[in-house]
Image (cartoon, rainbow, N blue to C red):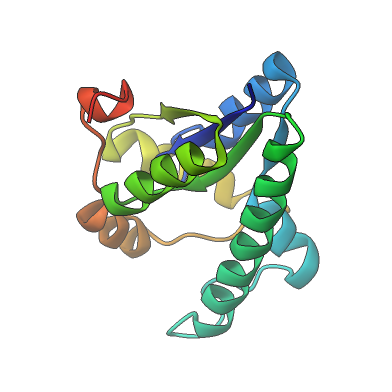
Length: 157
């Protein structure tokens, strides 16, 4: 049976690094929106004050990736969604969707302290091919991120 793997965590937590490893281990299709967005539109994050263009593009890419993921899962191939999944509500919806598709569901939570995230983000900000993230962005995201409980990760909810 195919499995839907979801990567949970904030930027800098190691989601993509782990998703790459998991893709090799499970011979899975890895879908990482930031890679596609950067390839298509360049560094469009923090270009405007409201990031409206970036956010709209990101949503469209995730929608297309999810459509592709469902097709691939139904072909019997594991899929890794490297989206972050910051809210319990969206994780719960994916768990229900996976069940309706008749596939497994596995959550991979990349827990990381805020301080460690910022150190990693500062380093990543110096690299080509990455969106530049400000400390204020991390502070805002930290405040809204809903870390999964042990029970949620283990699928006991």
